Length: 188
Image 1 (cartoon, rainbow, N blue to C red):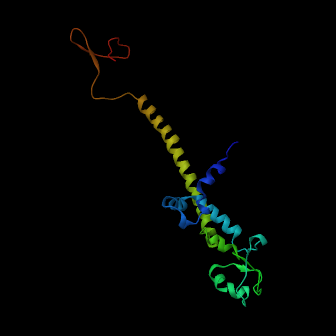
Image 2 (image 1 turned 90 degrees about the vertical axis):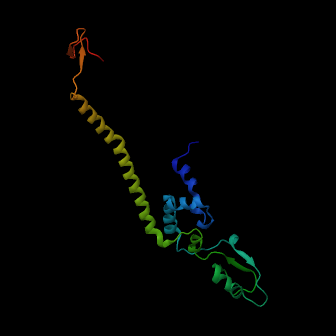
Image 3 (image 1 turned 135 degrees about the vertical axis):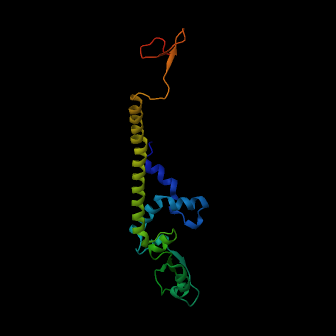
């Protein structure tokens, strides 16, 4: 079985799907600097936000209200605090309650806001541009500058060295002779 890059990278940063307040210190930092955070927030806020939730019958919470009260009057205080909806507000027995009435409540648990969708889109582009610029800069430093350095060394080595001293060889009779390219007495 081969693993593709997205399959390997995405599980490494599932902190986007964990409420921010429950993350340990280092992961709060990673949550903010990871582009995956802004990618997921942008996708979820655009695709899921501002939609009504309709619970399946298996997802409904069923309970009996106190005697003499309707489901709506019994749950009114709770609904104003926590949200959700009743299937039948006027029922006096067999109340059915769904914990979510719209998707914004669900997204809010993860710190995802519909109003951040364009900010997230812009941050993804900033991340892409910075990474492309960084890659081009590193390529330039590694390839172009090193090639220029090699050409510079070649150009400076092809010219004769000019030093203040003349190199020579002392003959057995004590005379100093200049060492030429074909001189067998040239010291190496």
